Image (cartoon, rainbow, N blue to C red):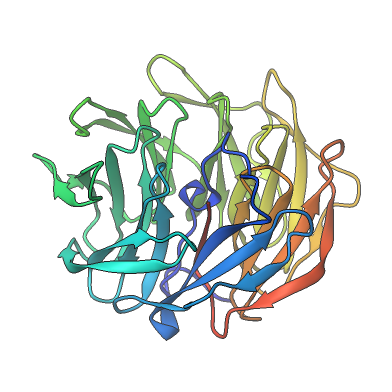
Length: 355
């Protein structure tokens, strides 16, 4: 079984795209996928109607050593890549055809950066440094995309594998793998992190997902068959375990993602090669598995990415070296493979951001 403790991998809701941003009038919109073995980001165009992935002109785009994560600024002018192998961050401008052009030099960060996310205002970039047990925070120049590390950064944490922001941008949540915790931080106007209170999740929490309303958080416990659900205090950001939690999923749940409505939750099961799908109680957040779930995926599904319009779900498959595409039934949450089925990435993908 593949484990993110033995290979450079990452997933967080930062790769899902910016909720609330619908498709433009164009026939397609872009997606970016990190491929660490090949030291590049693969660019795809997603057909708005069919969900088919086609290679972007000029793709792939060169990165540093072992890129683990990619994210796009809310303005859609800039992209950022964490290079886990050489502990750097790379800035790219996004062209008129969605192609990436790197803006040197790369910025040094701390050891083994695995996860990236940007606050809703586009002011700050947060980086999970798994090798140095820290979170780095950078201010973002809105005109150029340039990064500047803020005072007090990096902030200490334990074995961070994934990051998720509250929709308000007030709170940052961190999956702490080896301690079995999820940490909650307040975010000051300067980008500085405060608090760092830890809440028990389960064995090796590897991914966290916050619903679009900011009411609930779910953490996948990768070395088990469960995921843990929490309610979020909107004032303090504190977490409270849901009744009945942890909830059953497949084998080695590795990633979680919401549809854009917040009605459906999806969990990728790395060990059983499938996707569990759930409806959520609007008041308690307690999940109920939907009819037909789980849905077959590729081999070793590591991460999930939901299209910003909420029409498609994409799954990154580590061992089959491809991306599976599914259409989301907006009424039931059921998944149906797109006509394309899968798109190859050449080697194991580790993250995807859909813009």
